Amino acid sequence: MDLKTLYRDIILDHYKKPRNTAPVEAPTVEARCKNPACGDRVTLQLRVDGDKLQAVGLQGTGCAISQASASMMTQAVKGASLDEARAKLHEFRRMIVDGVDEAALDQAVLGDLITLQGVAKLHARVKCALCGWSALEAALDQREDEVDMELDKSLPDAKAGGTF
Ligand code: ZN
Image 1 (cartoon, helix red, strand yellow):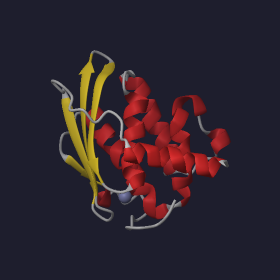
Image 2: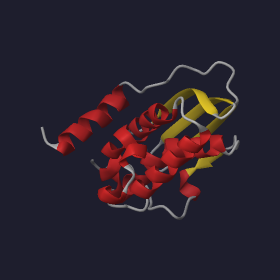
Image 3: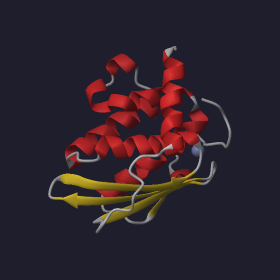
């Protein structure tokens, strides 16, 4: 099995069985994101206790990349400190938006998220991959309004369809 196939299998596994989908008991913040061009939606609940993301709850609909990326995000940040979560968000954006080379990325910070690296080359899917992360960013900033990926003009346009 080549790396691309392995990565695709991991993405599809998260899409079919998204992690951390149970509603969070007594969430301290809830943030949402939508990506209208593709029809992706993510609702993210967090329970922040002191400096730690004690609980993470994901509800979403949409394409495989959006939902797999959001699912992987929940795994990456659950139990993390606020600083660690922000570091993962920063590194994920460097990988997906800036298209930074694998060798220049912090693999320890990214972990399994590296499987989504190919999305950086699929400009139409960048907003899909970022939807869950934009909800995370809003939640970390205590912004409870819905993020609309369409309004982020720094990102390439999303389109429905496309392959990965
Ligand atoms: Zn999508």
